Amino acid sequence: MSERRLLLVHAHPDDESLTTGGTIARYAAEGAEVHVLTCTLGEEGEVIGERWAQLRVAAADQLGGFRIGELQAALSRLGAQPPRFLLGAGHFRDSGMAGTKAAANPRAFVNADRDAAIAAVVAVIRELRPQVVVTYDAVGGYGHPDHIRAHEITAAAVEAAGTTRYPDCGEPWEVAKLYWTVTEASALEYGICRIGEIPEGWRLPEPGELPSVPDADVTTAIDVRGVLDAKRAALEAHATQVAVAPGGAEYMLSNRIVRPLLGVEHFVLARGLLGERDETGRECDLFAGVGEDAG
Image (cartoon, rainbow, N blue to C red):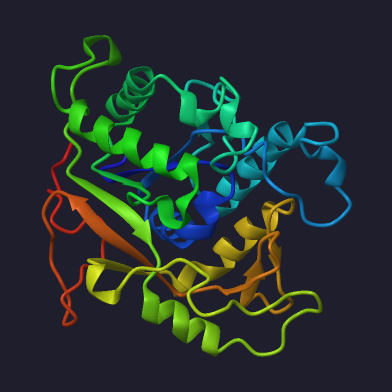
């Protein structure tokens, strides 16, 4: 077992690459054991292009199974461990957006028994024994119900994992640090301003259209410039959901909005103590301050 172990809890296949792909690749390359726990198969996702369009819910409803393969490929390209799904692949279904038919499905992640879902995350934490866990902030980044649910369940599981609650889920394990993955406002703005020519049919975002947090909220900045090729390759693996621009400096999702591929990924420390900080007052390492003898 590696001395450094990182667990990321994401809602759908591709979320891991979009917001934390560089971080996954960097720590994997540095020898850390990196695991991604995905809560749903992303069945309700829109599909880019015509090649796989018939996999959508309104047609064959086979997108979720297909996205397992995309996730497997993406994690392999990032150097992470094979994918894990909360209570098994397909146990929870993508909830779609609030108020949709998908959200009313009894199997939708938003309708999951909260205590059972927390216990399942606790079991994973106690099995893997990560010092650091990453998930979304309280608004789920951009407000998707599954992201918010992942935030709620992961935060509760991290608190419970080091206690005697859920005695059937393994031996207690205290997570040293819990982070929210976020996008810094100024970094996003700078990246957008540097976008030049974009493919036909893509469009630039309107002011405030892409989610971000104030710079002052960010506690930790991870330089991922050295692993951008791996992140780019992971995004390309999610071909039903992501299109990477020629040259690889930008990408888009099904809404056709172009987004810059940023060389720094940002986080907010939610639990634990800040470690060594640079001249900007931010950590440069998710494991900063975590004891070298953590077992």
